[in-house]
Amino acid sequence: MASFRGRRRRGPEIMLSYPQRRNTALCAIAVGLVIGACARWGPRPLPPLSLSPAPVRFEGAAAFEFIRVVAEEFPDRVTGTPAAHRAANYLRAQLRNTGYVVTLEPFPLWLRGKSVEGENVIAQSEGDSPENVAIIAHYDSQFTSHQAAEDNASGVGVLLELARALHQSPHSHGLILAATDAEEWGMIGARELTDFLKRHHTVAVISIQYIMAGPPRSVEMNCMGQFAGYTPLWLRQMLLASGRAQGASMEQATGRQEWIERALEVSEQDQGPLLRAGIPAVNVGILSTQMESSRRRHHTAEDVFRDFDPAAFQMLGATVEQAVLSLDEVPLLARGGKGSLASTSVPTSGAMVWIHGGGADDFQVTPGSYLHGGLVYAIQLLLLLPILIAAVFSAHNFAAGDIDLRGWRLLDPVSWIIPPGLATLLLYGLTELNALPRYELYPATPKDPFLYHLPFTVLAVLLTVIVVGSVELQKLRARMDTPPVPFAVKKGILFLWVAMVALVGFLNNPYAMWLFLGAFAYATGLLPPPRGVVRRSVNAALLIAAAAPFAMLLYSFGREMDSGWHIVWYLVLQTAYGVWSPVAVALFLMALVLWAQLFWISVLATHQGAESQP
Ligand SMILES: [Zn+2]
Image (tube, rainbow, N blue to C red):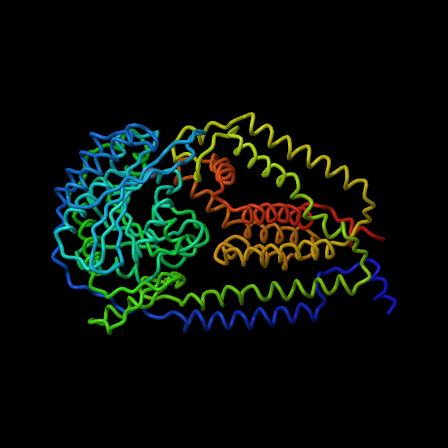
């Protein structure tokens, strides 16, 4: 008893008692078994959807010529410029001559600190049913390129030729073909188009972007939503079957890649804002066998009409035309909400049964199997359970124990968020005032000099707020009466906050939570008291592993955008223009300050707590 009291006075050595740890571990094992069973028996095979090849009217050679005209005769089509307006007029004339009813829809946006006007070109051809199928391609270009042939005169050329080919075919659904503006600044034209598409009961949208020059390798599908949504499985399957029917090889994200895309939700093509609005949409483009040279040309003056292969246009155009014709055969009846489809009559072929199912929440595990959206959510929730149970035990120990826990001690770990939080608010203000040149949504396009020239006044102001704020906070902290607390108590408090961040993160986006915070929460719970080099090394390894997904993604995007370490500044710009929601920013800053404090107490600090007390 005496020895127990002695230990007690020195404070607990571990966050949870032995029975609490045992119960948490048992829960984790049970969760592991359930998830194992889900992984083994959960995935359902994707019903094979095979379509018979439709006699397509699309002509690659004609698309080839359209692209040449858009690229060479309408260069520098940057949103809001006279050149872009001339391009829009050309597209309107072309679509009108083909037999469509065409309108120009202007909309305002911020670009390089200026308010400019973009305009969508919208062509319609009515069908017998009130429902519409839409094909879109963005015609605007970037400041850093001239012809912008691959990005995206190529997509516009295919759109124009599809307009001609489809107008000749009888179609029961209405057709909408739109050349969108301002894709480069955050898919603003597509965003502006969503109301129109909803008004016209649009049941599916196919966006076309980026036909790479050189010999074609495959048709690539892009399914990422912008801040929400993902291409429903039925539409992905539809495109896949259409491509195969036309002899194209198809590529799409599944498994880990789909998980990452659902976590990030920063779309790179026009399908993004449509998916957020609940409209089933997908983007298609062509990958060539010369990916690396295309990546080098991207967004530079080298992106000119050269080395295009008409076979690439044929591959893409035929795929999209087949998809539109096949969709036309399905008696469509849009159901609200998730954008899934239902039919009143029994579909004619087994393949079409699949059109009923496969919503936006279903997760494709492999090219041949998928998990029901509800099951994925259940797995994600179950995985969180051991963390929540450990957090409840930890909170209970604080409530029951004789540990002096005045309010400030609980709040102290999160007070570190105040300086960067104030800097973020200031960043919003400076952007609103145009001190940081305003952009509508996404920062300047990749390779734009704006991304690489740091505005030193803005940076100095932000850094000053962070430094002065931290110094003042430290002064305040020094004035507090802070008797040292044992490692276990500090860790317990930090763990409670980490669990809270994980829970809010889960409610915000479970995919993102499990990509960025899940390992962090588990690692925090497992940190042993830092006695000796070995345990400190274990702690360092656990925390570094927890931060690895974020660091690796940052690195790979830095490479993809050719921006190296400037990717960090790019994140700041994304925050300024609202790509990351305030909730996401707050979660990120919380995770950052909690991680740093955990690293400090479990790896670096010499302990004043359990060890140093007599
Ligand atoms: Zn681009």
